[in-house]
Length: 100
Image 1 (spheres, one colour):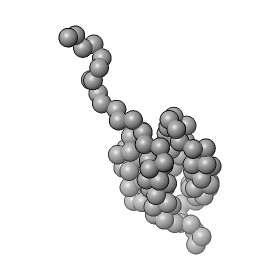
Image 2 (cartoon, one colour):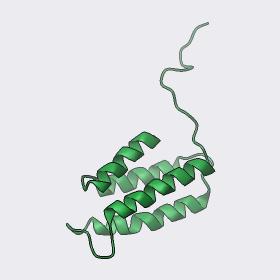
Image 3 (spheres, one colour):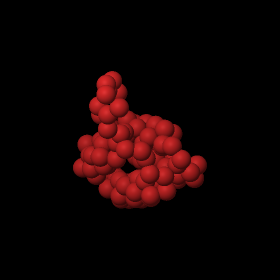
Image 4 (tube, one colour):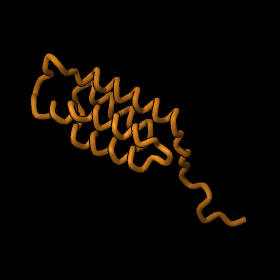
């Protein structure tokens, strides 16, 4: 997922409209495919995803868990990960099939 797509997914989490299982899978896949991302970021991500996934079993927020707070923490994780290992920009249509 692109950073913009992740931001949109986190906004949906804050609004209570996120598919938690898909969001967690997307975040894990993004971290796994992130070139140069230190291993500790994957460990922190797992620590953040554990309460998110367990909360999906319940309809309401518990006293000890806030989806909005967790979305904020995941957004912070994303910003710190981008600072630690900037991802290469992807541009559609550049470099492929160009004749010169």
